[in-house]
Image 1 (cartoon, rainbow, N blue to C red):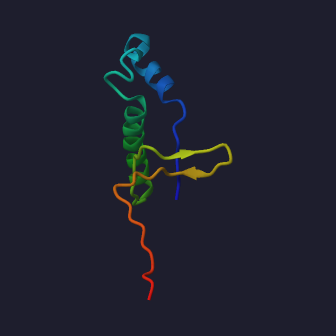
Image 2 (cartoon, one colour):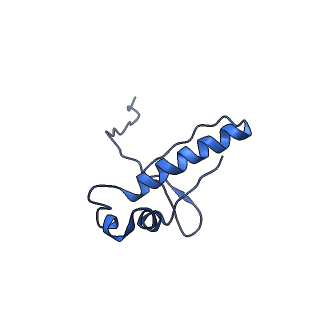
Image 3 (cartoon, rainbow, N blue to C red):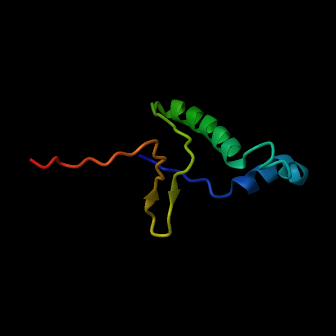
Length: 87
């Protein structure tokens, strides 16, 4: 399994749309989403050329820390504590 974290999405978008367009990043367009979308298209083409079948996911909230551990925050919808009944 591969995990690819794009670390310079704002710079990539700035190069593609210029400084004026950069002002829209965060207001109209999310740089990470735009770069991931284009990267996924390119990966699809490359995988097809190599005969690779794959599932490519773009997710939010997942991070890596300074020790290269994957952090996956959980959004808890509900919680219930279960205790054993006294007999």
